[in-house]
Length: 374
Ligand code: FAD
Ligand code: UDP
Image (cartoon, rainbow, N blue to C red; front, side, top):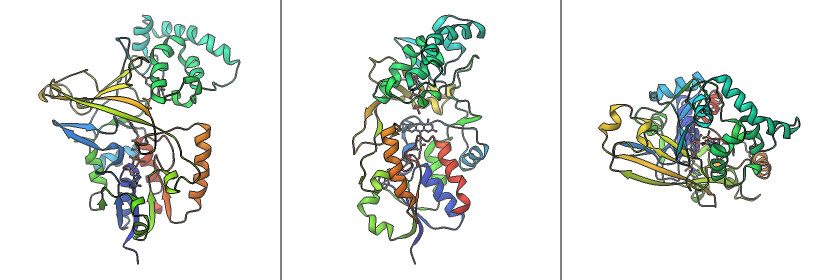
């Protein structure tokens, strides 16, 4: 008899949600994480009364009512609506691309004027495609919004974020940026969005309530001993590491953060300001209090915490944040996936094990889909 039904490697949203449903089914779980805290990338540190998103800004958004109801049953979410602003050469533009942006860019007032301007801007790029699909991010962006917006708001930001020219990046990355002919700065098209009231740690604590956990516990430092404890393993770490990198390393992008506590109440008036110019070394500045403090509450809290985000080439040992889903890496992932499919007692899930650009809600959705078979 094993001590646990499941050994869950990784206490991020995949591992924590899996543990929650397994417990509901009467299964006994042990959740281990190599970091000194639980929660994976959604972990927040409380500084000066502000929940600081230690692994980058996290905004929960979904149109899946079941997922929304589920997370709200664990902890109620606030009404935060993501409306990032772009700073290009000291001038501010609203995102996502909408009537405010078009007004700021071209002085156009009506949707018809904006449409005509976009059509004029797109014409050259669409003609160059000669009927074929955009083959890279630059072609995709130019045929979506044209050169002015591409040069000011997309090219520099994207090349900083991904560390390679837009011509070498896949088109799908930019498809996530909506274009709207209304004055609507809400970044997401989803029906629901927000931040857990009291921060993401409350969500993780709620999911893991009553479940045994060990932090500072690297699966690979005690692999045999830990594996022997449970009938099955849920693995949410890097899939290439699970197989000792025997087929090669998968590439990632990472982000480094320069965090500062400032002796002022309000630094930039918004949670997210993107710096889209190539010469500014960081991609964006996050002011964390604006995720959870609104109106007077911003001024009732005397300090503020900001993080400058620098996108960095990943090397082994750094935090693996964004999978690089180019052809070379996707092919390598498929080879690892084929090995994983042969495992009878291991579930591979989440961003690192599935080598997939998952947002939080789809991660939870993936676990909810399989919850009856836990
Ligand atoms: P993770 O949160 O990465 O958890 C994996 C855990 O496994 C980690 O805690 C790690 O320490 C642990 N682990 C790995 N290897 C081992 C090992 N060998 N032994 C023990 N433990 C191990 N999503 C949104 O919806 N909205 C956003 O605004 C958003 N912003 C993001 C910003 C950034 C910078 C990043 C990187 C991601 C963002 N995401 C966002 C995505 C979100 O973080 C993920 O969808 C979610 O965290 C995935 O959960 P996970 O459990 O798969 O992975
Ligand atoms: N993007 C951009 N300018 C911006 C913000 C985003 O060009 O000011 C592009 C960039 O290519 C990025 C993509 O849109 O990779 C998706 O950005 P988003 O912020 O939606 O996703 P993230 O990668 O931060 O999760």
